[in-house]
Length: 147
Image (cartoon, rainbow, N blue to C red; front, side, top):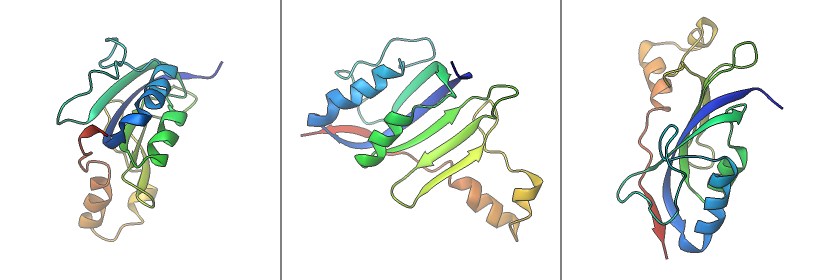
């Protein structure tokens, strides 16, 4: 059994109704909830006009790999935060806005991006750093089930 961590994921975009059952299966495989220690995800009660927020605890590596693969294959954007496991891995943020627009960075336990001095030295200006960090804070679209 691997090291365990928490995870939260925000998902947005248009999901065809024909794929809702498959999507819900991926969510159920990770026992993702609608809040920390909250109710399991119910595919019949999706948020209206909002992104879908899901939360998981005790996940292997804090990851939801097959859910992310499904999202990428079906043009759903997401922002995932995974907590760290001391001695094994650091917290991280991963965002996916579409093909060629995916970013990953070490994060704090309260979901903020972290840059090391080595990473900062790659940038020429403070604005370059701000632009880089902004990649992780862009809006995720609403989650909508479409015919």
